[in-house]
Image (cartoon, rainbow, N blue to C red):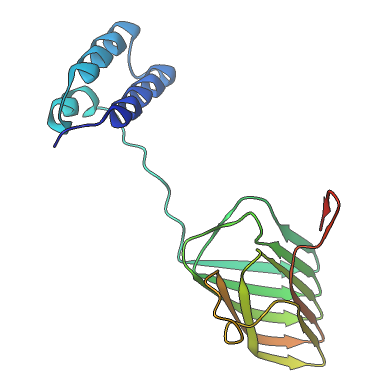
Length: 182
């Protein structure tokens, strides 16, 4: 199979990283780069990178368990969201900000187990949530985003269930005022 210019550049970047790690000398690097740039197929490139470790993307786990006990836990910024989140908190506060997160699926399932805690889920614009499967006991549930069955939205859908006791759960979009966001 023929190789494109962009794929050749990726191989040269891999060789450059090998020099930086001390796996190749400068003369070996020059020889290999010269050979890669002359190659037309993937088979011709194999001898130049076959003895180097391959670095691929790290897979996102299918499930992430978040445990919190008498603490404040906050997750924000760019992070990978698995298909299933398990949140267990006791006498603490959990805030998960999904506005800049990277999603692996269109459906995110969140299982809650909370006692005397507060959980704040900040969803990206266009996302929907279903909190009807949460069993509250002396708790408050507030949903400020549309439910998946109310709209025909094409965005990310959050299915939230579990049991909360003496806790508060809030599902909302990010608030904005001029340049501030919270």
